[in-house]
Image (tube, rainbow, N blue to C red):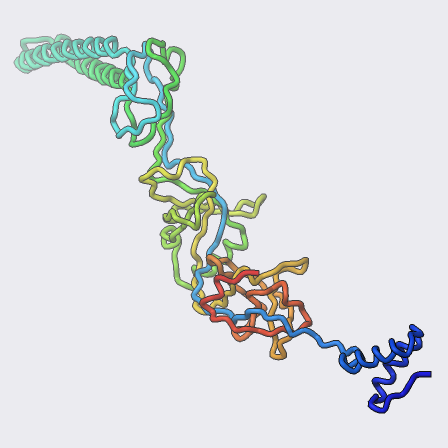
Length: 403
């Protein structure tokens, strides 16, 4: 039987009875338990929930955003020419350093010029002889013409004189053509740069016979400034671009002046700028794409032919796009989402459609309103369906948000 104490209340006596029932301790222990219960306030265990976790929230920013058409392309030279030996002969000199930049007209190779110089002089001598023969035949023709007019010469003699003159004229024309051919061949003995560019390593050596059976390739010259960028545009993008151009009243000539921006795989952003240069007149039916080409200045020769590059073409500008910190976005099998805090401070998961990224910010196309509070920091503490303690963060500070 549990002892009663006049100072014990019902709740305290119940605690002591529980201890006595389970432990069957002596009265002294029970009394000590009563004292401890009185001091500790033995009572029913009531769970006190922890405070709601703090998270940083911010509203989307409004920002003017330029919409771009993005693609992947490759660079190509505007001009590339194989330098060949157009006459037969022994290669006498190589007059450039492999891989060097040369100006238009610079002599690069010399092919046995003396032989072709002699052939030119021979043709010039033949031309001079033909000219002398023509002068003599024209004088004889004039004399026979005067005699025939006075009936001192026969008609046959006069006609023979005219034929000789005409034959001398034809011989002179043939000699003049031979002289020009010899002069052209003599010019071919010096292989010159057809334009400013970089010359590849030579493919033949001094003393080697070139041009014997067919034109022999000596090297290749490539123009690097400007440079082409080739890329393709999907059929849907082509339709959208044409629709936008019609709304703005742009013509095909205007489209070729549209700015393009290019970045290498290691570049940050798109540091190289140029203009659209060409668009194919038809869409490739097998791929559903349109071939497009841009041209860019390349004075420092940063871009080399054959590079894979990132390309973007500005389409339009939207003045009031909503942007949020990119770190605030999550993804699952349903797509991209953000966590927002509603008016009751309950976390909700909101599906969104995202647009281009602008540094640390991401454009939101659909799914958010300008007054929505987005969780931008403490994302691991924000669990959908649970209450949080939101701390409003100024919009300009959301760039530094972290998880």
